[in-house]
Image (cartoon, rainbow, N blue to C red):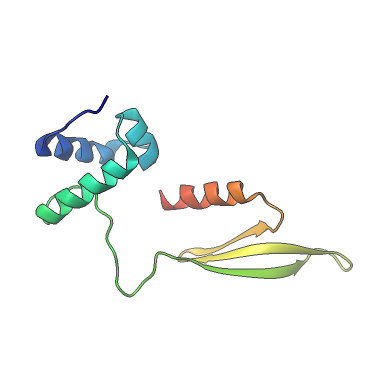
Length: 114
């Protein structure tokens, strides 16, 4: 069953996001809101109320939301090499074993961006 919310109700709900300690997905699940609807309403309210205190995602035209990915080989000992996946991010580097499951890498990246 769909729940219809007024603009005021969406404002109040989005303001609650600031005090919620979980991810956006967890917040939406807690409030029975589809994540796509959350982002749509957040964008709509930000568009019509540019000076509001709603949490909005700011974009910097000179920086990309993509991170640079490099695959390198790190020497573990004199005879063994281990392939790693190296992520360069704004605050440093993340290095993962190349055989780490893709789902684990995605979960880590989502956790960093939430």
